[in-house]
Length: 137
Ligand SMILES: [Zn+2]
Image 1 (cartoon, rainbow, N blue to C red):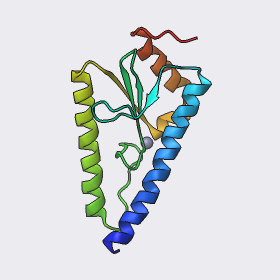
Image 2: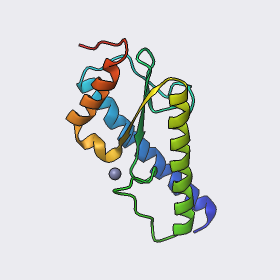
Image 3: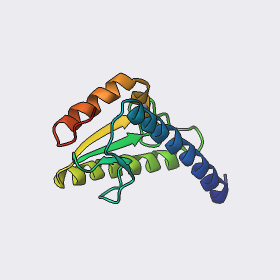
């Protein structure tokens, strides 16, 4: 497949992926009446969601794009390309987590598949937020 065509497809896939996982997280946060979060705050690594007062960063990872150990399957076409790309994403995620923690952030990572268990997500968030100053509800 020509490079230009492939990158157009990737952009389409990527924006859909982000919309579904981040949109799902937004609805979980709203449903649980959790407040004090911002999206894409310009701190190191630009995590998907940040609770600045509680100093909690939340990363939401699409199972494909971030190489979920349970669900990632390399596509048959261009598998070398994809393996390298996903490996870079995994390495970047790891570095981002380490840098955030070094800066004093608690970092929660949720996989796309975790978001199906809303109760579990909310419990993990509340536990992390409970350590900080934010008191919700
Ligand atoms: Zn998964």
